[in-house]
Image (cartoon, rainbow, N blue to C red):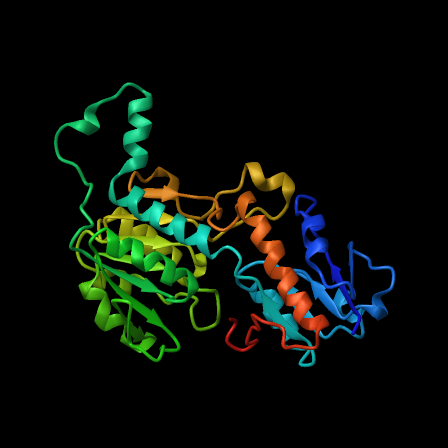
Length: 326
């Protein structure tokens, strides 16, 4: 069968030629904010489609969000179109997992302040009391034990850590590759045993604010928190005050609470209403864990797989439950 797929609002840096060579010959691929023949489009590819764009393509059967996770506004909009299936791409599993481990180590070993001071010829960090900690023999809890969590776990184990996984849907084996996997209802009973909390959750109605002041207070003294999921899953104010007041030792944060609203604001937008940048016990990353130029090849490969399945009349992989958000 023939298939018309259209890419909306695409970045000019994406290697579309790589995508085209991987597509089934029956697939017609177009791109642009205003498609020339919207009535022929079967699949839309966009992370942030507008209502007008969807309504302008009356025969669309599927929307593919070309990155991991679905923006809450997109999920809410698509809930109004029950005949349009929603899908996303988990192409950035490996780089996101690697960033989580990098943030964990940088936060635990106080890398950023030591680097900053030595650039100014200040060696004081070598002497006296240090806030760095050893991870060997400690316990890490991975909140959101999915594809990314499964890549993080063996690295933590290689560091000598015990790993606990928490997820909404339990696997058949509750003790998977040495990781005890628990339901979300067990979270508060597990936190007191944890020295590191690694959050890999999507933003859904169930996850927003899941980790607040009371949950952070349950962690072991000197715990490290890492977030590579979505900023909203950890309460902004609670996290800041936990860092200021020593409730937790340190944090590595890749996902935030405020983002630049446009291109012009990219050079002058604070990531939070709280001054995280003033804290020495925070490692800050501008939501770059999964945005890796080297990974664009994988993005195009997975996108081609989804479109080829649709062209062959097969179910499109990576379908998102519009109610749950993943």
